[in-house]
Image (cartoon, rainbow, N blue to C red):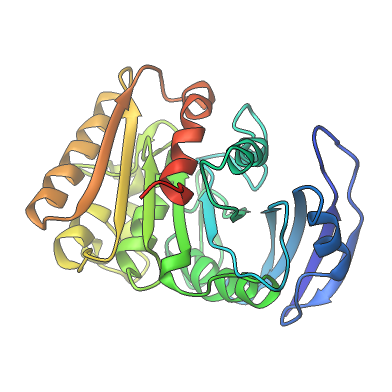
Length: 303
């Protein structure tokens, strides 16, 4: 397995096209990138050969100012929404790299690595043993890609806190479903999870009743109880997870209802969570307005 790294020294507003170089998956972050991050944060563009999917997948990685191999850093896995990609969190007003720079500089959050992977319109689940398409959705072993391919590669190539206490996952829209699914399935891998308007495109992702056009989610050899975040919350020990939910006051009703169903289940199992409803709609403008709050949840310095 090879990891192709594009070392883009993107300080400030630079948009210089990155050159890509290829390194072994078990090597560490290059000395050049570590040196660059000593004076400013950098953004790297990666391509990884996924064993689970049998194809290459793109990843963007934010490395904070002051990164070095002498210190271990927490990692946030940031999952895009439907029709998004690895660039979503770095553009469209979300600008997670610039937001993190500001909050690290002010001392509001700890320096952290942010990994934004491409995972297609897949909901982050294992839906098919072979790659397939179903209308606008992509079926395959996407859960295995994110958990068994991506996380080990990041831990091998970066100086990370390679335990649940330093590993977080969150997503917007469809990414919120994927984040909840993965964290509730592997609670020993993560300590914090966030679902921000947990939905996918025009369809809710945390549902009271799954719409027919998304029934494929439960046709990949896994029962609904092993995929549905609400059902997973009922059967999983969530005591080690801090959970963040939020959505807009103009949210689609079926999405809001799905969040309520999840909140009710979290109450039943006495999980630790916070829930926020703020002004806005299901769009980048809303997520941009909340991005600082998201980062404070994941990496805030206040106890």
